[in-house]
Image (cartoon, rainbow, N blue to C red):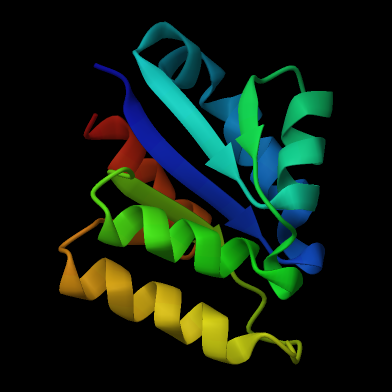
Length: 122
């Protein structure tokens, strides 16, 4: 059974996410891993050569879609490169996603250092 990993990156962190994915390409493509992403992050991920299931963009419901999948037991890890230096109109969705990860004991990385540790633990 494939491990489903959700990936999300705010606009100021999308390049950092693609770099992270490329640095961990061997792990992400050699294991039974299925990537799920919010819209624009998913598009950037595809451009980098990864297969990814794309949902809505975060601000129009993608964060909530991922949270629902976490609550339903469909996602085993979330990597969310947040931009703490910018305002986000969908902040309530972001906090809801983080809370749902805590409620359901799902590993959540919000920066590359933590994400690397989680990926290495697969």
